[in-house]
Image (cartoon, rainbow, N blue to C red; front, top):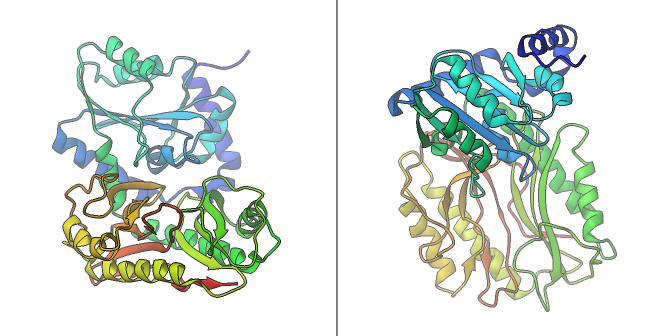
Length: 415
């Protein structure tokens, strides 16, 4: 008979860990690193008066919507998952499908791994009751970043109905704040992801030529790093520099065949086995030098990139970024379709900072700190919305200012 009792499932998981746990050692961090994370989370819970967190993640955006789950456990689910994280007591990880529970045991730093059952809201509510927080202050943590989602409505309703004496609040920003500042172990993982991303960019540069398709370029760059890391994502597209019709690279690649006089724009992120990636954005001119228009797009983007780097230091603010990033772009009546700065780690996260008068980004008040890691990507788009340039990369804010993490040169590449 299928074992569904939590105690039985845990015993099976412990047996699997004893036999196979070393096979997954490259996906987890040290015990000390997880204890550091848990201490930081509980410190923030204390300040906010929270007894327990209900952390939700889904597989959207190539699993980056499970960044908070992965940060706390080391596990990513193919569908969705929960972590119940108490101020006092043992955290619990819920895997979505029963057949995936053994794998969750092997990957997760959290010892208490359970099946979420068909009613995950009820399973989570039962665990909160088990912990003695049925009348406590419960914080909901949803998926991070600009595509943030909260809990599924059915689970939310179950939790609020079953725990009618509890107080609930949405506190997704709690994890965003903690994850933005990186530890030394995280920086080591980031540097691995950066190296894989640079490797993919070099493979793309080598592959670009007239006669190849966008989809074939995607295959070339992906195959360069998958033996050593994980797929994350790439944006990649092409258009003629003489008659452009692409403001920024596409999410989905086509069978368009490259021709001489084209430009290829890309944004690439390759992950290491712990889920940390680089991010690099470049343009490649195909078979000839860039046109004057594309060279101007590149030159403005490069100017903004270095101007932003110059102000990125501990204590710098959103307004400091806007003051140097906005004039070169907005004085030409150009715009941006992506944030000039965004947080980065296990995926995109806040802050999202655009230009002064671009309404697509909130430009919230924010102060940068030592240890923050962000992507600087001034991607100017011309006023006709038919041409643009993608360039930028991942940086680490140190006590001395912004440290560039990528080795790949900052240049308008020519194939």
